[in-house]
Image 1: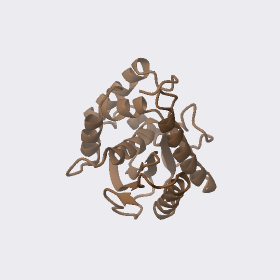
Image 2 (image 1 turned 180 degrees about the horizontal axis):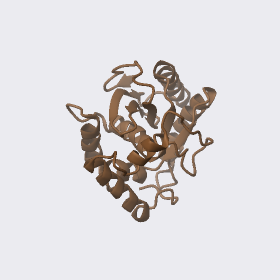
Image 3 (image 1 turned 30 degrees about the horizontal axis):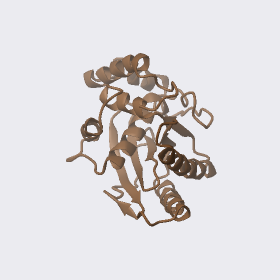
Image 4 (image 1 turned 60 degrees about the horizontal axis):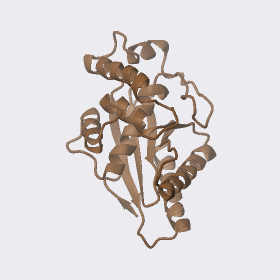
Length: 234
């Protein structure tokens, strides 16, 4: 049922670290990843997997496989936030419907545990981790590898995408205590573990490294050029 690297560690680090579970939803392959992100935006891999089902598997069994996997990962890793890819209408309607169904399973599982859920578009994720809203799969995998200090890129692409979603959410809102972005399904929740000084560092203040400031500047530029939340899927 699952492919790719399994869980690395369920142990929780320092209390000030934010743990985000990212999900790249899909009926045939669903990427699930967990990362810990410190107030200085340093991200660490906790675990990643891909839930896969065969072509002959019926819809109910596929959704059940995703539901069971999400339940297991939520209970094992106890994330603070959940981040899911936000889909919009496109030409391939069956794919969109399947992704929406898988997303619903994830959102419901998080809601049962009272966890806030954030929805991020593919262009948001690309811009956040690479600085370009039109980056390709290989670029995303390469940057995720660099950000998480991995020995090799996560495979398959669904694993890298789930990791990128988790990193994006932590960097864009969850880590800084700004609440969840407009268009998310759940109410904003501030996190007292991250004081204003951490937000200042994360927002490009003196506490940020040169690389982090570059990422932030690229993110700010992309807000005006990639149409985040504009209603299109890139």
